[in-house]
Length: 106
Image (tube, rainbow, N blue to C red; front, side):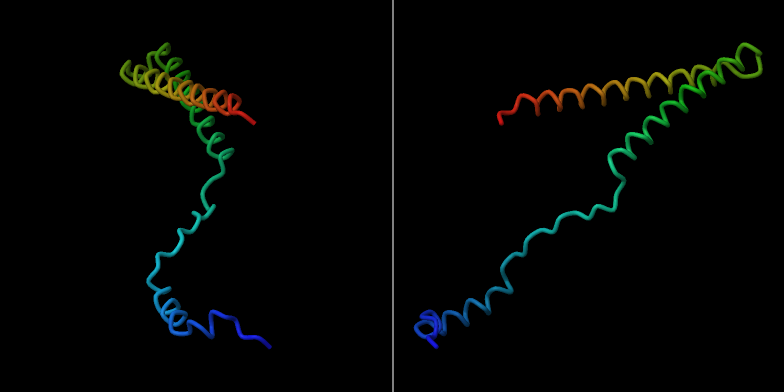
């Protein structure tokens, strides 16, 4: 059988390369997929928004019965408003990303 040319002509160079391989930088591993899926994340955010809206309705009803302080009502309304603004901002970003992808050449 024929020996590879590199082994017969440059045996010392091969040994040097093998010795220095341990000092070369290694590749970066892909992150593990142990986190939540995107669908689970969207579902969680949606449920939190619904709960904020329900809490606002409950506090509004309590204020009509005069069984709660006005500060609690204002806090609940502000929380629902912030949740709605966040949902709208996320929706706008998703639509913008979709439109950018659709404009890409094939």
